[in-house]
Image (cartoon, rainbow, N blue to C red; front, side, top):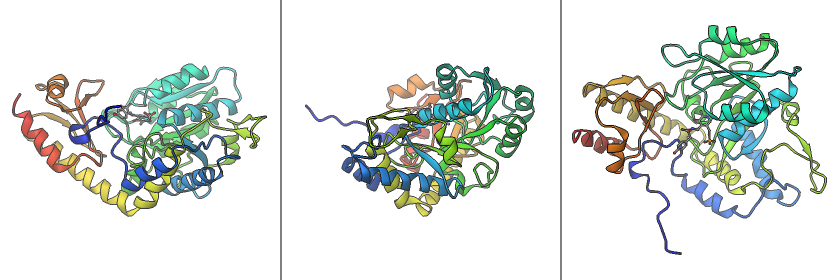
Length: 350
Ligand code: 0PR
């Protein structure tokens, strides 16, 4: 086969994934042939998975976490809803999520036959606890909060949402798929140590700088994870909680390698650098007369009246639009200041 370059990150401003840390890349390659779905056979990677979960617990303020390394945020969100549905004492379960929640919750609702009730966000794109309070009832299995939203990088008021979940005996799930590796360095109250959170999504393959596929589902107790267990008669292990069967050991090993290398110093430095880049870009765009959604985490959205994504795309840039039509730039680790400088300079062409 002719060698093709899989991805040049040079002009990618749209992705929530990034170039893996060198140690993560190496670990991924080393563990390519292992299958953590069969822990009786592949013991080493299985031990590594527990290490990964323990480290994710450290990042999310949870001393004795139970969970596993998923294929990504979608799987972790689906499984969190599944835990809640299985545990709920109702025939007509619903979940309540802000409209800013990722579309993986629509998939979860469809697959699991759980009614999805979306609530409006406030003027700053955060979940509105009053709207959530109006939507929950005794059939609510889970209340979802987003910590680092896909479009605007906003953090929902997690303690309030967790209280609302508690009131109706529902679980509280936090989707920190993207935000989980930057939020520890902010003042936000988002994790298990800050509120009565039951389950969380946090993806090493996004801001965690691990190789794809590496997502994370973390819960505060083994009994919650056991809601997912099915019997596995012909494996050495007796049950399996994961959604997929055969899984990539590459994701597991690279998650451990990335967190080993970067937690907490490397991630902290990256957060400050990415945040400074986001603020710089927001300032430049505002100076050009654009309406900018002030970045709270390293995502910039700006009402670009003029250069549309297709024009930029033709020039090699990868940017996406929000549902409302704003241009959106995710300041991932591969997005450097010089890259942003050339981006802003090129805007002058339009
Ligand atoms: N939760 C949140 C908050 C997310 O932002 C995403 C992905 C997910 C869950 C789902 O995660 P997985 O894609 O790992 O299953 N958000 C990005 C999006 O949908 C995913 C993405 C990643 C898009 C890389 C583009 C890209 O180049 O926009």
